[in-house]
Every structure is written in structure tokens, then in C-alpha cells.
Image (cartoon, rainbow, N blue to C red):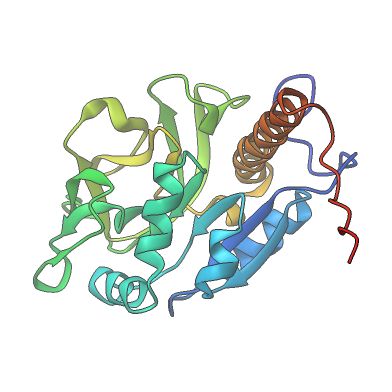
Length: 249
């Protein structure tokens, strides 16, 4: 992080970065998310393998496309169970664009479909009378409350959006950022270890990288905490774990 709190992607890493699984469930725009995370020092990899995802220190659910197909792909691969397990254990999860939307209860897109139900609320079509859809381009996101998601960013940050739908969270406390296209819409959410953004941080220049840097830092903090718990357990057990010696025949 720079002194102002914004992530500096050029800063050297003193230790290997956290392992972040970029989940591949058959939707588009996953490679750019992986590249951005690698640039920030994370050990990022694209995977649809359940076991590799389970070992990750953080999960990113990216993607472009239709809500029903996205949810079907996640469930067909069993990645919904991996997401639920990580969230239960407090492991950070970041949904980007359609990856944010599928975290909600459901969507009205293409006649409607159930989501993963991680966050309460439904995804609805943008209300943008007289404006083009999909909404493609840069839009200011106003941060409505403090959050580690937007740490180091100003009160408003211009970020790149590509979408025709946006979530309508049932709990206003989940909303972190709001943008506008005709009318205001929810552009960023946070509940516990779950973060979601409607925009594409990997395509949003330095500010987008700063936000992704906040996620990488949160994943690294989880690794450090886990290492600390392991050290405490070893101390409580009498020090370092040693291999037992074979008994005499």
C-alpha cells in the first residue's frame, strides 16, 4: 500500500502472495482478472477444479454473460459448495459483474432464475429511460460507508461498467457503493468475507487495481492469521512438531 492507503502494484513483495482461485465456470472475461491479481503479487490461477479452489486463500468469481447460464455453470461444477464452505470459514470471496449478481437470491433476467442466495435481494433490469442499454462505460461510484473494499479511495471513484442489470439488496447495510445510469443502482456490496462489485476493477485503471489490491491484502491477512493460530497451537503443544522415531524391531 502507498502511504495514502491506495495499493501500489509496483511495490515489491516480501513474501509469496496469497493463493487466489479465479473460478472458471464457462463465462467470459476471466483472464483479465487473473492478470490483474498476478500483477498485484497474488498467486492467482484460473481453475474449475474443486480441490484446487478449496485450498485457495481467496476466491474470485468473475464473468460476463447471462445470469441463468452463470448459475447453472457454477452448480454443475460444484463450485457453489466451495463458495459456501469458504464463506462459512470467513475466507474472502469477490464477485465481479455477473459474479456479483449470482451471489443474490435471484434475477429477473431471461424470465428469472434462482441465484446462490449468499446475499438477500434480487437482480433487476436497470431503469434508464432514454439511455442506451447495456450501460457501457465509466461511471462514478459513490462510497456510501467505510469498507475495506474501498479503503484508500476517495469519496467517489470512476470505474468501468458493462451491464444491463444490477442487484437490489434487501438489506441496505450491504450496500457500499452506488452509481447511476438514468437512476441510481447498487455497484458494490460487502457482507462479512463477501465482496461484490458490478463494475470491472481489472479494467478500471489504477483505482481498479487499488480496489483489487485491497482484496489481495484481505486474503493475505487471512493467511497471516492462520499461520499465527498454527504457531500458537504448536507453542501450546510444547513447541515445534517433530517426527516420531520408529520403534525397535
